[in-house]
Length: 229
Ligand SMILES: O=C(O)COP(=O)(O)O
Ligand SMILES: [Mg+2]
Image (cartoon, rainbow, N blue to C red; front, side, top):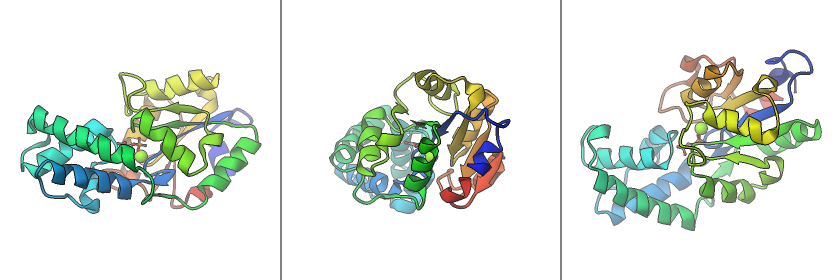
């Protein structure tokens, strides 16, 4: 666990928090499929996977708002609420019907999680994705066994980059934040960790609103998940 352990004083690393979308799972293909089906069902054009990649990261409601604003050619905040709700409800229906068949676990993820949990580290998933969609995906990719603690985007009133979900995960793991590090793919993950002085490692391959996550200045940046081990 050398690279992550280097983020904490020797022997003080007891737990790791993981972002889901863009960090553990390349989930955009299913998100884009469900969102495009929703847009079509609402009478709009499909957005396509590349656009959706840039919209993921702030939860499902924000995703629907960004898609609706794009479909209506208006600014994000100007998307009419009832149109956003229509797209969101339809997106929920499609995504509930299939959230994983087009997605993939990133290489090395399962092996690394198994390794860390064998070392006795406690692992948790802290995502902005609604909790009811998170559990089936972790199960589908057979990594739920390593992450008994899951904090979703609707678990608390706050979402990343607010640090509350990270603090809540630490409480559920029975660990002090001083003994935990965060692993993510976006400025939201870095911002949430920074707010409670938690070290943060990022993967460069994920989704960060189309910007390189290096701009958010994580403590460690790796190109492959296995590089964290
Ligand atoms: O659902 C999202 O918007 C992103 O979720 P994440 O926090 O796992 O990247
Ligand atoms: Mg992410």
